[in-house]
Image 1: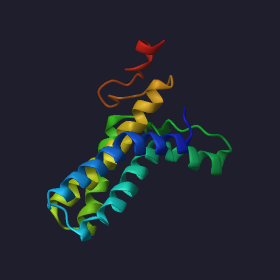
Image 2: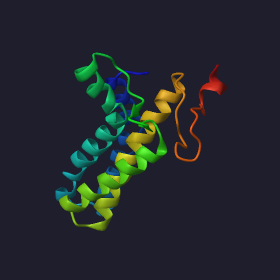
Image 3: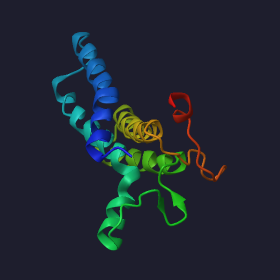
Image 4: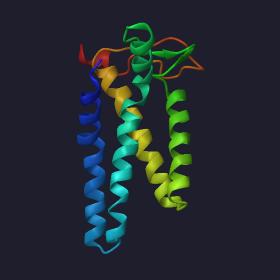
Length: 149
């Protein structure tokens, strides 16, 4: 399992950089105003939280039990697409309360979801078995690890 700074760096170099390049291209086409540049900070926070969100139980377990087990919250695996959908909907809700603009709300949700997916991919590549399809398939499997080993 990569450490939290590794997840943040992976998100920033793989996802956020592409978003910044797209926003820069829009600025050159005069489709982006200066007041929209503050939206980049919100996208950075949403994606950063998304890239760290599956490991929230590690902090909880470290404080309460002194270990770093971080795969489940009760019976629900945090490294699953089901948990990612819950986070995506939460990000959409928070984005709606911040902006009330459909385009910006969707961009916050997409960046949060992309951060979450980048976390799952990085854990999978590093040899972890992820519960991708948790409610439908309750066993962990790896999409990437078998190809690299």
